[in-house]
Structure formats: C-alpha cells, structure tokens
Image 1 (cartoon, rainbow, N blue to C red):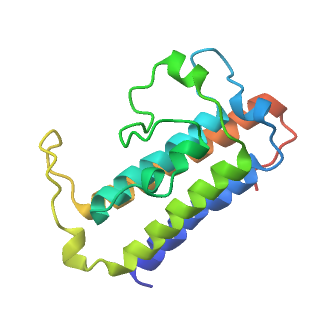
Image 2: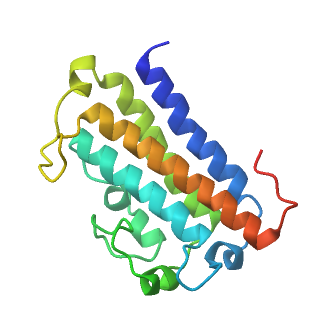
Length: 175
C-alpha cells in the first residue's frame, strides 16, 4: 500500500463518521449546545470541514472551495477565507446556525474528494517540503500538515459523536 492510499482511506473515514453522526438530526439538534460556551454539532462539522478546505487548498496553491464553489453563501456566511472557526468566541459559536445535514455533508464531500485527488499527485519529496510558517519550530512539512488535518478532523468528528450522545442519550451508537 502506498502512503497516499492510506491518506485517501483516512480522509474517507472522516466522511463515514460524519454521515453516521449527522444522520437523522434536526436543525435544532445540530445547533444545540450542551452549555452556552460549548460547540454545537453543526459548528463542529462546519469547522472541521473548513479546516480541511483551508489547509489542503493552501498546500495545493488553490482557492478554497468555500469561496470558489460558493459554499459560504449556502451557509449564510461571508466569503472570508479566514473564517474557519479559529478565534471564534462563545458568542460566535452560539450565533452559528447550520444550513442542515445535507449541506454540511455535501460541503464535506466536495472538500474530501478534492483532498483525496490531491494526495496521489504528491511525490515523497513533496511531502518533505517545509512550509513557510516560522511561528512553528521546527517548520512543518507538507506531510506533517496532511497528518495534522487528519488528526484534527478525526478529533472533531469524535466530539460530534460525543455531543450527539449528550443530546440523545446512550441509545445512539456511532458504528
């Protein structure tokens, strides 16, 4: 198995988790916060997809699908490439309203498919290319960024399952 096959599989698992975790949820469920300063399911799904869209688009040297394909409008948000959730206050999270599971999953699917098509285009030397991000030491590489996005997305997908369990109780099974 090649490294890119593992990444295609890993990123595909995020989609599988999201499909199961969002299945059957109402907008009220998606926007529910366990406490006023906690993330909602809808915000978490949006944020993890925004992170992947932002980071992979940057590695590709391309525009984010958020803007290029007009996903920002479908979410009722500005066409701001920096609007990925980092720095959101509890008030920002509380004000977030999801457009629903179908739009959440469609946006994630588009981002995932672009990511999965990108991985096989990279050579092993591409993975070792250092990113110009001097605030990190040592400098991250393309390979490190691909793994960090995968880890971040899986962590947030797990949080979605946890919040759903808080909302619906023990009866919901993620797998």
